Image 1: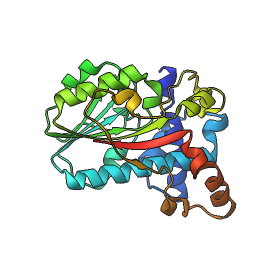
Image 2: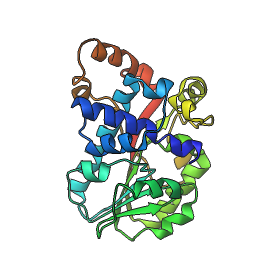
Image 3: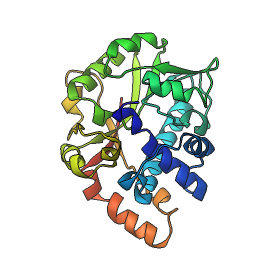
Image 4: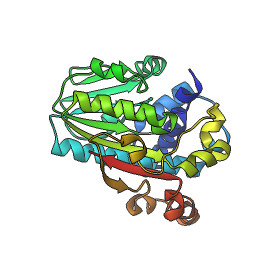
Length: 260
């Protein structure tokens, strides 16, 4: 497994930790998989502050996906860079078709814990190769969960991926997290992904940097750390988390956009 793929263990640890605490999101699959895989993350990657942050990010993506499915029950859900995430089980909404997509070695591990069905499929996939979108099923509407992946793709690669989506699907809804340019530069020295060997990250101050010439536009910007989730923390943990991960300072390095 290469350096980028190993980053999947960082959010997995965060979701397992908060699930055991009974806060933010319940994820028994993360608990089980973390115990089974026992990947040795260390340093900042194992920080409880990062664990809270990763779990809140996952919960925001879950809630958005659930809302989109309630509005578009016939849509195709495309979770790009799914890692070992159990969103397909956490999201309590019916769906016609859900594809969890990631690199082949990640999918191989994933198949130890999940199984394909008529409505759920695991697909080896590389978002930097837009031709692979042709392997996905037809649909009038696609809901794209693009969590924790844009920072590993250049602007050209992101543009080509979204262009291929536009050519294939009439209606597209995307939720994606993005490092700013400042965030990408700072991450060279202080990002937990450094602990698993990643050294090159990309940042974008404006989604138009990679959407130029496309139909997709920013519909809204969301918070990674909504107040109702932050309030689930207690005492000093809540106070310190607010200082680190809420407010304008955090937004200057990391942002969450909805596109359609």
